[in-house]
Image (spheres, rainbow, N blue to C red):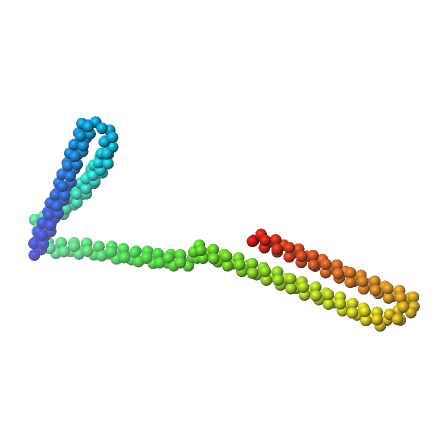
Length: 255
């Protein structure tokens, strides 16, 4: 049974060699045909003596060169395959002729099969590791925002920053207004207290020269304090006006 199988392998190898030789013969015939066609074309061109027509056959010349290169490559491939098959045929013939031990041959095939399976499993493990690495990198790339998302985030952050700055300026303005109103309240309370004091003590104060002097000094002190308060309020107003003008300029530049 083993001998019949080996003879089948030998016949199959011989058939493959015959097919290769047939293909090689076909390529040789095609090459000869193309060379003949090229010679005929060159002869026709030489007889007609027309340079303009030569240009029409330039593509044919290029095709011929390309086919020659392909034929050379095919010949080289066929020779390599034929040599390999002939070596296999010789090996099989030698084993058949020497009556090679079937058990030894089977053992050799088992070793080759085990080695091939080991290489296959190693390749599968390496492929799985590379696939895991690719999946990991892909996930990392998916987590990275795209250019459009980054632009959208930057625009949103700019809008939030502008909103915060606007709220901050409004808060500062409200505090400044509150402080100004508080100072105005204090001035009005002092003015009311002064008017009440003058109203209650005016008659007694103007009854004597000393009382009138004391009243005038008191009035001058109150006026001086009010003037200082007024100057302070004006300085605060000027600072707020500068801030307001600066904000207007920034807004105009952005627009």
